[in-house]
Length: 383
View 1: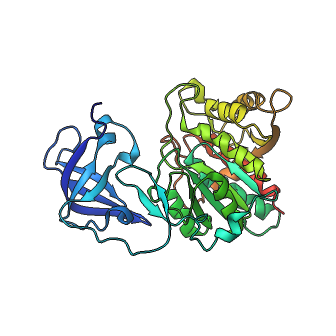
View 2: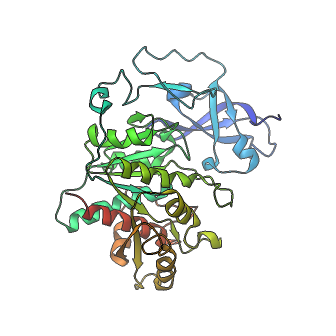
View 3: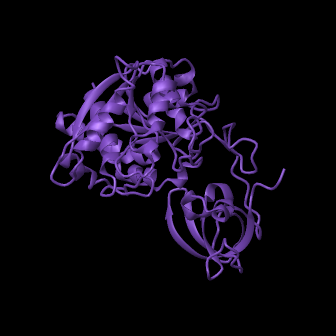
């Protein structure tokens, strides 16, 4: 087998933005070989909980595989380790859940469902979400728009702002620390807690599976509603089944099996040049139509032809495509939710940046309106 990682070593020469769990760095490689920039530097990201402090002058080992291949990961090289100083051992403590298992950066965390957790007794026999709404989306970028819809729907109904938990699956980024969206929503109080499930890690709570993550959101976080989506960095291969969003269907199954109210947020775009993603993405059609076996509420955004955006034609396409998922053609329930200029105004006030596949709110309003519609519907289900 040929090597699968492209390595570089360098020296930290500057620091950039930092947010909970992550620190941007400028690292000098001393060479420009298609990886480093013209001055021989790269923009790198360090997770201090994994690699320790990385001050200016530190020597670091970098994984630059994505940069060398011209892929995503936010344009970052990733710090693997300090090479000039030993990182102190972590303090002894409970927890035996291993995330990123059997990789060189496997980490041991205290799981909320761990035998050593103070919450183990509450979760040992937990088995019923008691109708709690669970909104499932394909892309991480849907999260802030769904929460905006939840908050707007609650206000319109005269209810208190819902307590929202975010469950991050492991289809995209594994460290929750990578997400500035989660950090910003937590800081603003829009999300009460994040729960990282499967191989993902770094949330306020750690869980083995999506099932225990959902139950922890109810039993430990005290959430009124849960939003489930993968971390940043959707993976797709242009094939029917080769995309990480397939797991959205499994998350809906988990919500249904546990007695929750599964709500499917459609991945919609009016700006994607690829036919398979125009209107309702084939990701949603496959994950919800073929993988989700429990009946779900499929939220169909009714896109107004408002003064700011002409969306009516796209709305007709979305309605036709979504019809394949719902009765009588499919097993799910259609829930039509009007969204337009009023909802766009609310989305402009979201406390984090809105971007999906490199497009912002003005470039692809339908993407965010569809997610907000799912939040609006979920708010109507709150007790």
